[in-house]
Amino acid sequence: MSSDNSQAAATKQDIKMIMDQIGKLYDANERWKDEILEQQKEWKEEIVHEFKVVAEDFRHDAMGANKDRIENHEDRIVRLEQHTKLLAA
Image (cartoon, rainbow, N blue to C red; front, side):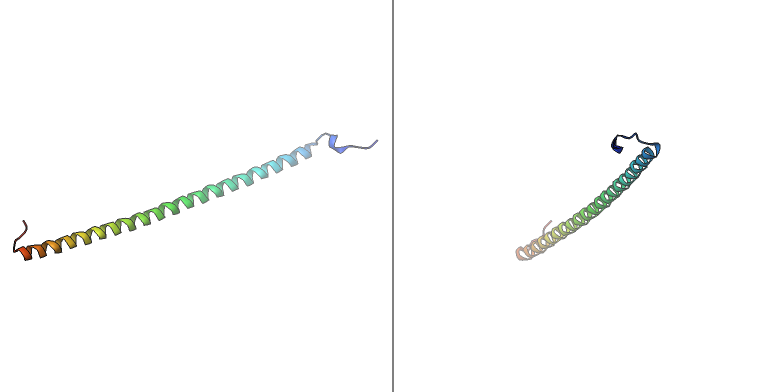
């Protein structure tokens, strides 16, 4: 008769070993999950920062363009006033 160990009952030591391995797997999965969440948080902060930089640049450019436009209009008004010898109210 040959002995077939695949049909042997699990010992308490076998069950303890499996439970230890499951515990290690759970801990590794928790560390992995925490790393992913931390990475996502860092990415989010970086994206928000970049958005703020782009928005500030856009705002600055728009203000500068508006200021240039106003200065050009004021120069034009002064030239027109001088040309027509009228003073705008």
